[in-house]
Length: 374
Image (cartoon, rainbow, N blue to C red):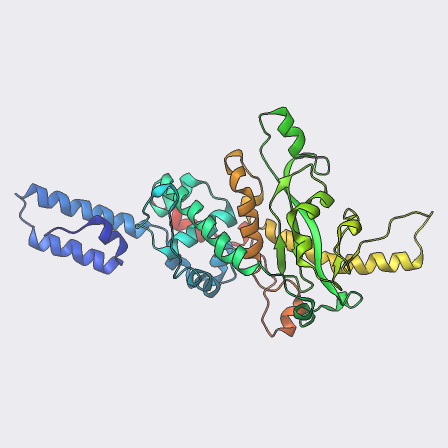
């Protein structure tokens, strides 16, 4: 009787060990070299399986779950995983990834997004080939984009829905539906000069890709555009990305001075931006308006910071440009799985809020011991 290595790899440790022991008892004749070789092979697979990185290793540590995945705790991770229980996966490159459970595939995918770990290192940690790492990442990128981004952010919450969790800083703008802002991520310099001019951002003084983010008054990211070349103006992005289709008469938009979009708005929709200085100094009314908009807009800035906590957005390499928009939109959608951005909103919703954002220095030295063991 022979056991399949693939089946053993998917079994738990005890079952795997029992299979090896059973083989040893049945084929312990030293003269049977074929059986002994098979036993050694299974023992090696068992040792490899024991050292494979798994979600189970961190299930009981919310701190480590936050660090490795960007999600607040294991419960949130499992809730996200449950959304794919009936999802039919078509693996990138035509591969069949059976050696990793879906739980560990999602864990791998989130580690890549949150820490931007290289494929070679992920290959060593998960004990699979680089091709498998690539297949898992691209497959789950498509799946999470379809289920979480397109599924959850297809419809923008109405003013009535926003009113239930409206922070005090928006009391001057009770009809605010969305706060708009653009954010940029750096990208490799293109080989062609004409492309370099297109993606070069004069604001950032480097080559970038630029996306529009829309945030509800309660801090929830409700809209994320695809990424545009860094030289694209805010107004051009608003006109092209489809965000204007989200608004209905009576809605109000808050934005920065760069959003000169009044002529683009649907009938009955208004935009509030800080006033421009057209006199020697601002009037008292202009100062108060600037301050009130700034207090409200700070939340979209903080939301952008949260999105950038996914380190894969630190820099987009040329081989990832084709997937850059999906990566950006998935990071925006996953930001909503974190704790509430605004303390008063969390209090009003009776949800405990943890303000700590874990950085690399917050992880104990012994957290990495697992990976350093050979």
